[in-house]
Image 1 (cartoon, one colour):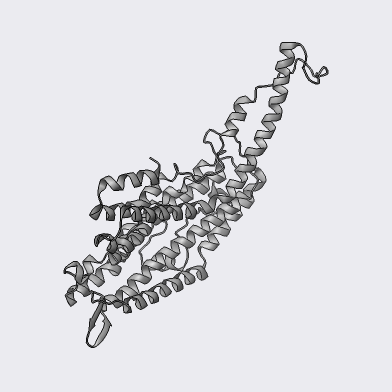
Image 2: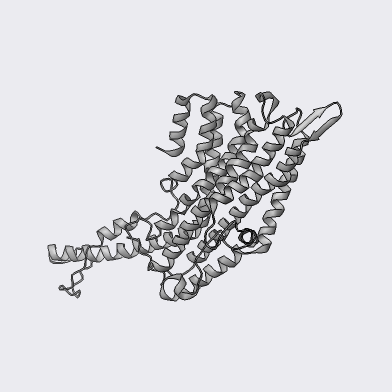
Length: 393
């Protein structure tokens, strides 16, 4: 049954909530259309374009690398231009795939009949969490705290830049810096925190689904008892992952540009970042790992017991009796099917829905910003082996 037929709204993870309603009133979004192109242009203009204009007026937009002009600041470019734009575009991609995933879960004959009503109730509960005012207030508060930290960090700088002027009279923040802190940085962190909260909402929904009675079969050809489509959800987060990776990669750009980072050190950073990605996308699927492990164990035990009966029957047919404890009373006209193929298929069932192969697109996206930076200063022939090890190509 489709969600709409049961008065359960579709699972649209990036709609609803105070920020969405604010954009709706401002005509930045229209009904079910998140309008990513227009929103990305507006947000990037506000976050990156305004400080650029203020820096142009102040004469600090251009200059040599040592002068740290605005246009050569990798942190500002990564957060306010790339990350904000990518986070906005990622919303539609994520929403579409998660909506389809929930629809498949409810209509794909995976749930016991008695579990359909609780499943729809779980979707409605998830949508209430999505719309939480408190959650978005917390996201905004964390964004403001992050911006306050930036003020402290800028005041600790030892040389002048587009953001800070240091002279005999002390140090002062430029207008571009204040705008970047109050508006740009807060917007970036709010979008990131909001996306992270909605990923938590998705994780809680999957946890609720994993506790329902299912109709899973260990021998399903997808190798995951029919749940392989759930494990592919991280691929919807490619743009989100690139956005986050750009910000982290920007933090090491200064060392790379000044030749203080080796290939080994960059490889270690990339490996750690991949581990974070695996954990981030793997945690929501822990509940299903438990379900699939139990299914695999029970299927193997049942198939093994049936295999014993089949082989003893084959032994009786061949030898006329069982060598040990002959089953004389067993009806000889009852043909037992060979459970061997079922047993072998169950052995191949993987309880882990998130595997390295299903994460290849998002893993490549995670490493892309680091590769782009590394290519500016580090030898290609040294970077390629590192990438192969990380992606297991």
